[in-house]
Image 1 (spheres, rainbow, N blue to C red):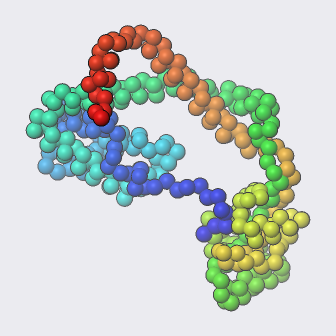
Image 2 (image 1 turned 90 degrees about the horizontal axis):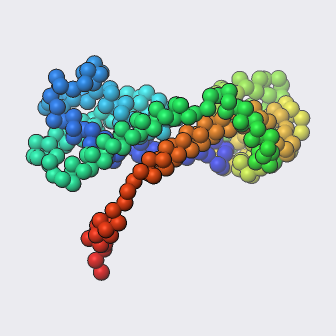
Image 3 (image 1 turned 90 degrees about the vertical axis):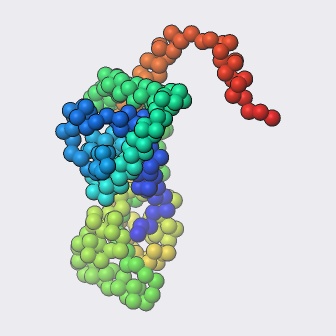
Length: 316
């Protein structure tokens, strides 16, 4: 439970682990399905088999390849959990089994399927090449930090923030008299010298902040529910305690840690974000430049393009 009204949307495991894998994966599985185990690459043979049955095997390398479709920042969280890996491996087992059946039925020789396999293979190899180029074009952390500092100094308006406070809170969940009495008891203990962080860890229903001793970090107007925000911004001195504050989540006791006037965020707070932004921009620009250079060699067959378009135009 939390008092913030602007939570980051959680990433759906169902979406991340769904069977709607990229066409790249389908192509890869169809090609592998026709290969006997002995003829497969040594790396695949060395990788542990996670699921197998009826001549089909899914290895750790297969799951790692499948996981490339998951955003890098959450990938370890997904494939670091046995239940997720089990789901991914069994999904791939179904996919490869279907690919094997299609191969046995001769579908791989269908011209449209062959074209799809080729395009999918092209995508895998092209992405591998571009990933290698990313390493060359990405500025080092030191170079990116210098650029980040220059951007920070050149665009101070980008980093302006309204007045903020940093506060801790203890949340007693519930709306009844018992919850209120418990909140009153916590407040009394704090006034008698109890350690706020310790009580937050022991008593707070907001487990996310409780693990940090109730610390909510800095927040500005509009980030918290109105009752909580009003009470937090009314505190003036670090260490000052609020009265018991009731909100839709229950009863809160708030302690002010620090006030920050309106101004510009310190560089240290935005450095990591800017470094990532600069590195991502550099690699993206390099990709675009490489594609544009290659595109110059393309010779269009306009007659064929017009004929193809006409043949595939929607009929009235």
